[in-house]
Length: 114
Image 1: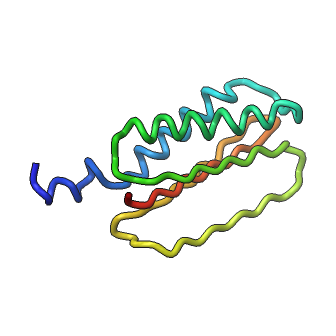
Image 2: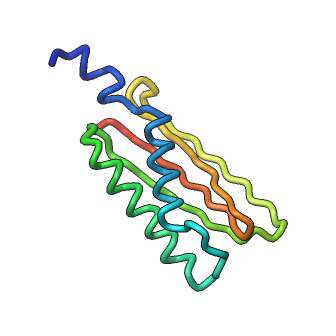
Image 3: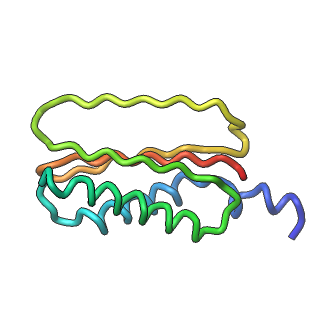
């Protein structure tokens, strides 16, 4: 493998790949669950831990930050924003919004080259 191969899709931040991992982690943790305040802490931990485990198993040279917000679906607004000061050619981010009839889940992944 030469240096050009290392900068390609195989080692880079591929949003579609990351998004798929996040969606699977959310669905594995929440499946058909109905919002339950007493379970939110465990659900958010599970989503973050599963996402990190799957991301690190890709064996790409990134340091990852994963956040998860679960909110009851009750008509209230939720607005989030993030900004990053980094090298756009090597680092990346991805946010996935998931919902069912009783809750919203928003997961963000930030990856910086190690």
